[in-house]
Image (tube, rainbow, N blue to C red):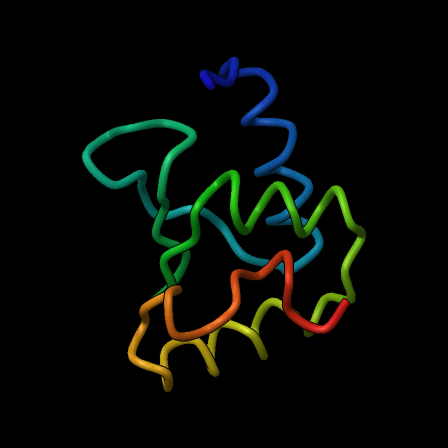
Length: 86
């Protein structure tokens, strides 16, 4: 599914405001795909959109990301963010 630039901007702005971060760049310049925020890589649909749509606690995504990296960074071995601590 393709996302409009306006919709991606709206979600990313909310995410960045919520977490007091900013997007460094989009991987391979694919806007709405995977972006680098600090030293962290987030998928727009799987992580950023879920965080905003589900109104998750601000600390939860950082907790999940840390544990995800400890698990080897492979989502097949660790739950996706949308399934983490519902």
